[in-house]
Amino acid sequence: MAIETVGESAIEQNIEQFLLVLSVSLSVATLSRVVSWLRQIPYTLLLVIVGLILAFVDVRLVNLSPALILEIFLPPLLFEAAWNMKWRDLSRELLPVTLYAVLGVVISIVGIALAINQLAGIGLPVALLVGASLSATDPVSVIALFRELGAGKRLTNLMEGESLFNDGVAVVAFSLLVGIPLGLEEFNVPSTIARFFIFVGIGIGVGSLIGFGISYLTQRFDLPLVEQSLTLVSAYGTYVITEELGGSGVIGVVTVGLILGNFGSRIGMNPRTRLLVTEFWDFLAFFVNSIVFLLIGDQVHYSSLGENLGLIAITIGALILTRAIAIYGLGGLSNWLVKSEIGLRDQTVLWWAGLRGSVSIALALSVPATLPGRDVIIDIVFGVVLFTLLVQGLTTQILLEKLELTGEQPLRQKYLEAVSRSIALNRVLNYLSEASQYQEIEPEFCRYQAELVEGQLQSLTEEIIQLQKEYPQLRTLVMEQIQDKLLDIEADTYAELIRAGRLDKKLSPLLEEVLAAGQENLIE
Image (cartoon, rainbow, N blue to C red; front, side):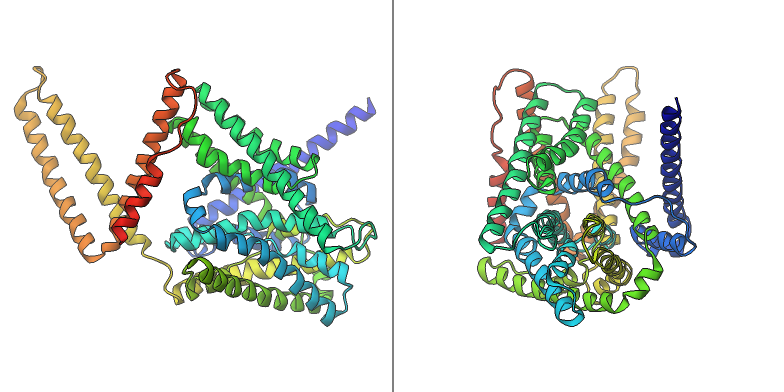
């Protein structure tokens, strides 16, 4: 009976802590929308600042364990990003993204490790763990800022694509290196490379198997809540199964997310279900980010950071330098190999906006307690993460504006609203034309209503034409939307025919290649 009482007490305490964290996060979200000057700060960074304030007054909301981040928080964040990443956009940037995610991680690990080993006297095995922990980028705040300011779509794809894959590569690298300082393993280049490919291969294999399996399964029924639940199970299930098999759970989740978002959602879900699932994952990502970034700030111990300021400063310098070498060097290599044409301004933003966040914190906290220097690793990583989030994160908008990469978001929004109103009013006119045929409705009434609508439609048409003349680049917005709609119609038709039993297998998309070829001809 006593054991049951203790168990119930622990559960009650955990629930209270969870509700407290959630209440603080939602309060910050509300204030950031109500107080005008707070809107200038990205929401996730505002959470970190609030967490730092709570840590300063020694209010600890909850103990942040690595298992909590890696097994509970990380899968939904990775899945949501992969679900919303369009493969056709990612495939255009596959080489630079791969270079940044693989070679960029290697450059970061080696550069940071050598710097703190030579300048601060930290042992090389421990220094390598610091480098591995800090090699994973976490651009959640930056991506949100890009979208809000209307930064280029390509810049957003490069940043998000790199982050998706380098998280997995960083976790794999950390797993390979963590046994060295404990004397459990010896560093050997050939065997390390072989283990790396095994880790990644298992992740891709399990992710592909689960992703395609669920994709074909959902073709056979139309149950939105079940299909939504399957995506949730796939995210967590893929991570757990892949880790159990000795692979990279991060790579597995990214793989299953890409497959379900780009393949499964098109062949196995109708448009309403696809929208429902997307909104569910948007909510879950917001929910998880709200908790993670608040807890990052809340876990800081100012006294420990103060004792290691010199180490943190050296690591920050090494991080910024190695990031510059990776972005500019590998960007130049990609431009030379496949003519990626990643401009100097885009490379500069990619360099400065390479923030570190939850994955770095989780990796540092997962260092075995028996390892000498564990506390130093944690302090260095926490200090560097706070620098990137607060200094680089808060100055990225200034950099975008100085480099004139903020786009024309208000103008784009105005144009899309005018086009949307035009489409809606044309549908109204079609309805009035049909209604005028009914005997119970007087034709004169319909004619008068149609004249009013046509007058408003004429004004909208003139506004759209004027905007197109002044800003010809706006035409591409609607063209992209129409092409996406055409692809959706094709995929939905195949899925509908399969569910009706008129097809027994998925037909490969035909329009995607046709539209891509047509786009190239237009450019030429």
